[in-house]
Length: 631
Ligand code: FUL
Image (cartoon, rainbow, N blue to C red; front, side):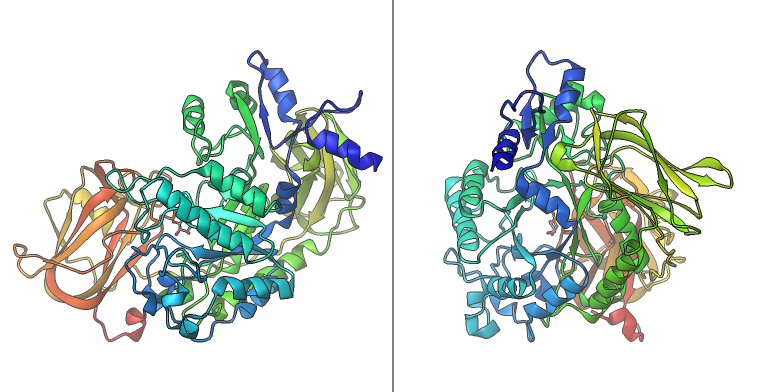
């Protein structure tokens, strides 16, 4: 009891009994006169809430993107879809959950409503839901089926509810939409038992002239705390932070105690401007940036990435499920970089997780078990408190071949380590195996395989005393990368001539996604292919480096026989989500269009800038090969 009271005092950030340290839970405000040193001292005593801690300990969580897009082939629906399209033939949420459980995942988060507004549960707020679909004669409830399956197999359950709604008429009307949104949220948080994560996407493709909705985040937060006190709120929430990309790559230096004020607070924009940061910034917690900050948040990072190129299921991506090598690399760069991995596995049109994805999940979990099931370090599980400059030597099991070192801080006492080195005693001398900066909940460092007799861990710099919970030494078997080469088109480009552009435009058709054609303005790309072709679709690859300016968001695609008279092809007219997930976009037409010329006209750049960039454009024509026509 005594202990409970003491922990409570500590967690509440109250003045603790003399001699004990004072902790700040989740958030702290710096006194205006605080020095840089005082700020770092306070930063070292910022700790997670019990919910955040429990969430970080999960390590592996799963996303399930499923909805109307599964049936239209799109990534973002426009909200005009006919609910009649939603008709999974063999939906089986237990199959999803079994696959996730086997894969080692601890929670499943379902897209209860994506940007298209279609609800997977029979909501009272709109008819744009499963109720209006033929599935189970309108009497089905995907959220309920998943909830029950999670309960049966012991998985935690979370919901994704898109704030951006392209179907709701009241979207953009302030209070009216806020009421509607909170009603939807209330249904989800009241009728489905315990919810452990509520995911609010920050994405919005309305553009400068689109609808503007001012959300009532305070009311949203209040609703969640009232109805689901154990839940963490993610992205447009203040418990879990978006890592900043959808490629599955975290930061090597990742502070959970960060200067990033959650976007739901009205002051966030101003504070971020003053600090010169955004969600994608590299540095969100260094000494230098903490010294300039007014406040800090325990706001740990979540790495969200899809097992396939898209978030929703598309049959033509069945062969593009990420390889085991790729997934493993993602694991090291997410869980191994002090983040929680949120891996998306999208159910298919049958309502099942596809065999290829199931197979990969099995391989993934087998690989992690094989790697981390055998720790070659002796006594690594003993707590160790370290001051800057302290070293500790660990014995290693005789003759063990190793290449991976694991470190964990006891984050219930804050995140503190700033710099460390791992050395191995090899052939009579100490040799540096790896160096690192932050540790946090978990840090994995990889190095060239060797057989050290001993390991020495040195902490060079820390914010107050560091508390190591555990260290470990492992062997991660190298895996050959078997990623398949993707076809960007099937019409040869060597005869193509480019109208209205200089030769540099070749970079857009050279078959190399690393070379990029960049130009001022929203410039159309007009090509004479040299002969008439039945065009069935095209691909657009944006720049693959970090320089995304010029990436096309909205476009028009036209064909012509003579370069004068143009026919506009029916397309979705937007590369949905390309700003967050800049992968190759494939557009397949409902019908084929005959033309010798084609023109891709950018209508809006991802940030509304006036420039264009293209890494690659490819054309798909009707061919005898069934493979090329696969949908
Ligand atoms: C993005 C969305 O726009 C994608 O469609 C997907 O849901 C991803 C998780 O977040 O911002």
